[in-house]
Amino acid sequence: MAAVWQQVLAVDARYNAYRTPTFPQFRTQYIRRRSQLLRENAKAGHPPALRRQYLRLRGQLLGQRYGPLSEPGSARAYSNSIIRSSRTTLDRMEDFEDDPRALGARGHRRSVSRGSYQLQAQMNRAVYEDRPPGSVVPTSAAEASRAMAGDTSLSENYAFAGMYHVFDQHVDEAVPRVRFANDDRHRLACCSLDGSISLCQLVPAPPTVLRVLRGHTRGVSDFAWSLSNDILVSTSLDATMRIWASEDGRCIREIPDPDGAELLCCTFQPVNNNLTVVGNAKHNVHVMNISTGKKVKGGSSKLTGRVLALSFDAPGRLLWAGDDRGSVFSFLFDMATGKLTKAKRLVVHEGSPVTSISARSWVSREARDPSLLINACLNKLLLYRVVDNEGTLQLKRSFPIEQSSHPVRSIFCPLMSFRQGACVVTGSEDMCVHFFDVERAAKAAVNKLQGHSAPVLDISFNCDESLLASSDASGMVIVWRREQK
Image (tube, rainbow, N blue to C red; front, side, top):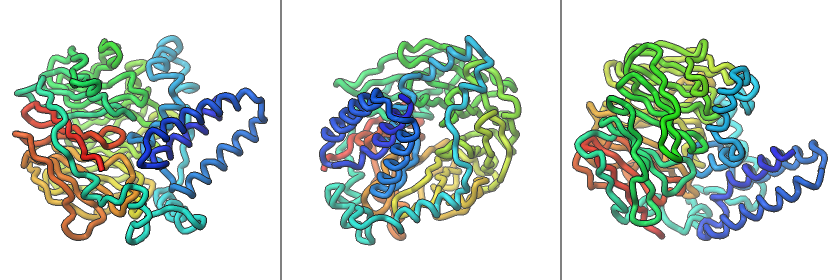
């Protein structure tokens, strides 16, 4: 029953970021001690049913105390990495290479609820309506929230002290993607149209480029970290995707696009990292098994234009894809087989390329509806509400930015704030990084970072939001340091 104690530890890790916000050292000591006690308890031989009951009750109690958290990435994905820590993505790839028939048994490791998005939003609200007396949750004035977070406003929380470091190894070629490793404060990667990927380490000082991954013969359009950070997947204009080992930088496998077309975007399936979805210039989305290098049967679909953006929901059962003709399609993803079923289509604006899609189960504790953040070359950042389990979208609001032609991206801030309100961050063609409060009716702009000399294409927070990285069309990557309150 070792798996049960790992799941209990994962539940504790999910909520650990919200214990004693002003004493991070205590949180580290707490989770280490919990891990030690749970390992010792696992040897005691308690009945399996009793352990499962304990896991269920602890999850319910913590959910009532802090609210249900279900986001991948950010601090909450740490729970998933703990569950999978004993078996990395590379381990599972080796299993498939030894026995391809293992796909059905090993490829799918977790079941996911098929409840609708409407039900999810209702359950999110019910947690707060039925919370026990004394629970600390945001009030209309967010007094309790600010007390836990150090009595700082949202604007103060996202104030930055300046540049921490500037990377210029890709100067003169655009860097379309920059990403911190999952649940990591100091490991960063970026890809460039010069055909390479840089892996960088920010600590110890001075920050350095650990290695440069070379092999693509044309520009690298996108890349993604696996959940355990042991591999990266990259897509390129040379019509191939490559699998890289992050530890030593070697290329594990090169996989040609099934259509022989330029590959423009990629994303891991969040539950099963053996599956990666790619989008190409021939309007097709393909689900690829990186263990076998093969396209998944039934895992392909055609859009109306070149596929520029992809994003899964947190459970991995809904996929959104955006194209260069202004459409966003939703797909139902079969967790067992990898099959895609086209569900809905939204025309954001005819002829306006959709360059970024970011999904979030909650925007904030005050806005508990599943949401989608979209950039679409309209000089606006668009926030949509997901209204059903087929991915139907309803426009909630928009924010003014400059974007008419460049592939600008945006993100939700990874940590769910204890303060009233919530932030989204976006690049812009005005060479600035913009922060917006999605819950503020007027004057939603929270902050603006200036320092780039070209359009800002992508941004990425580290897991505790202490650092923000931004990349631009001239090849510069700036790491910004947040002010400590």
